[in-house]
Length: 432
Image (cartoon, rainbow, N blue to C red; front, side):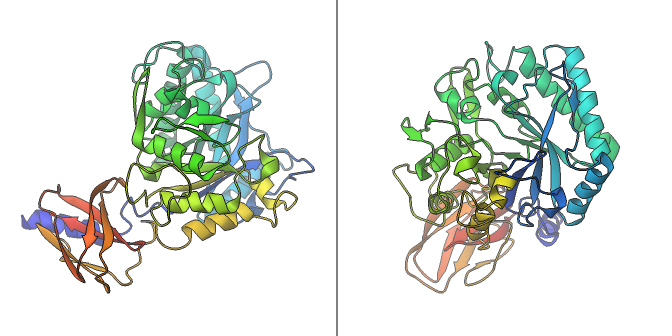
């Protein structure tokens, strides 16, 4: 028992714990091209609030749909590699996004798969990228049969195998895990609730097979139209309800004709939206509605529309936000000010209410560690609700504080690390 207690105490003292080490992510796509309405920005001049930068895009070489290349448009390859390193020296992650809306990638056989792996590994190693983002659209991924757990389509099977091999190559070279993110369109994910075939639900086997390695899934909640929520109702892009419903769907999971899609932990999910009206064909959501939706999802604000979260208390470990794109966010011709999306992210996640920024203010949890019960000490006995979450952000217990020293029975919990959320404050404790 003493050895087990010391192990748990060590887990508490050795900060950051993996769940706490994940700062809220502001993911932005950076254009490797120059257009008048959203001009080219030097990579290492990107606003500092973007802590994960997706370089757009690695695309297939001419005459192929599998042999990948990335050529910086405005600077030399060597200079671009130095810009990547400059951002990394600031503690930011820079990853290479593959594909995009106009560059289909299709791994139809093992020869094409291996060529894809070799070319992407070379790109990663030359520029020093921290990982890859899968942004396959259109015909790049499609379903003709099989299930989520057992895909039969060569494109999907080869993509899964290719990503695993790229990750293995990265680990062999650098001795650490490669960052993997995905940016599917809604039809490829939540669209699986409508059908499982062609593009509908086509990403689900990829997400499912790579879920353990996946860092962040940020579905494009734009250029979408309407989609079913897990409550069976239909929601329209550009609204707070759409953000909330689509986000909870990938956390809670949903059933399809290709089998059940098991949800992802909230700390692997970010909300993907356009930076301004001109950045997408549809789905732009005003900053007030975005904040209202995110506050509700994080468990720190009221319901902004008609959709009601399945999980009371929300998802305080929700990973963050993604936008298309940094270049669009930087211009002020489609919003009231430059970097309005980044500013809204800062307002939403900069309050210290995520598990990444634990603040011990007016509440305390003791004893810590504890075996059968804890006490939540507050400065108020106004019957305020509290929630207990596990390390994956799943709520496992909820109740109300009826006194300033509320006793909570934790004897039925498994040994491990847990979090108490009360009044937008979060504290960690250990059960042994």
